[in-house]
Structures are given as C-alpha cells and as structure tokens.
Length: 162
Image (cartoon, rainbow, N blue to C red):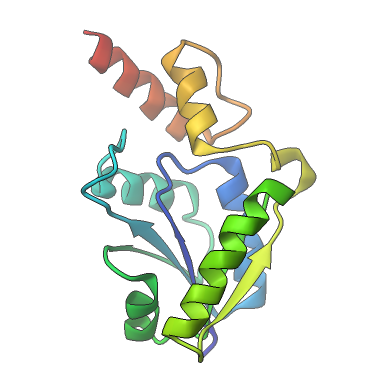
C-alpha cells in the first residue's frame, strides 16, 4: 500500500488544502491528513475541532484518514508506514522553507520521500492565516473555505468578541 502523510496545522482547513488532499488521493492508496499539535503555537481551533472540520469536508473521499500528531513528522510517518510526505507549494516564497524541511526530513528518514504538489492556480494565494484575519475582521470567507468552515469561523470569532 502506498500511504502518504499530508501534515499541517489546518487551522482552519481551506479550499487549497482540500485541493491538495484531492490531488494526493488520486496518486496514493491512502492519504493520512496529519493535524499537527504544537503547545507553543496559539491555534484558533483545538486539534479535535480541526479534525472534525476536515472529516466533515473530506468525507466523500474513501482513501482519506485524519489523525493528530505531535513531535517529529518523520517519527509519525515511520509509525504510520508512509512511503512519502506531501507538501503543498503555493508560491516561490514557500519553496525555500519547504526545501529545507524536505532535506532535513530526508536526513532523519531517508526512506520517506517528500512530494510537492501545487494546488489549482485559484488557490495559490490562500493561507489559513489570511482566512482567519479576514474572518476576524468580519469579511466573507465563503470563497476560500467550505461552508461549514466559514460558519465555524463566524461562530468562533463571535464567541471571542462576546
């Protein structure tokens, strides 16, 4: 079985993330969407909420599994029996960081490849950080995230303002 890990914070999951998940699902037998948990990083949604949102919006894909991880990605990938890690590249500015991470991951686990996938052109400007900022300021994020994620953002920011 060709299993790939697609790691990220997914805080929140965007249409760009879903595009990469769909692309990876056509190339691999199983895609493990790995929601990263980092105590030092302030997230808008808990890992459990992020997992639930991803599960809700990717439910039609039969070869997707969602899991949470912390620690080294290569330890998680090894434990999962993955043959590769997929990373989305939106712009040239992403490449330097992702290239460094891929080389470090190769040092840690030479048997696991890193595959870079580009999302559809219409998603190249999307990031969770930008989506959160638009939502925080009351903007419409409906074009950038699935309906249920837009609603979760509205509810979370309304609760934070209350």
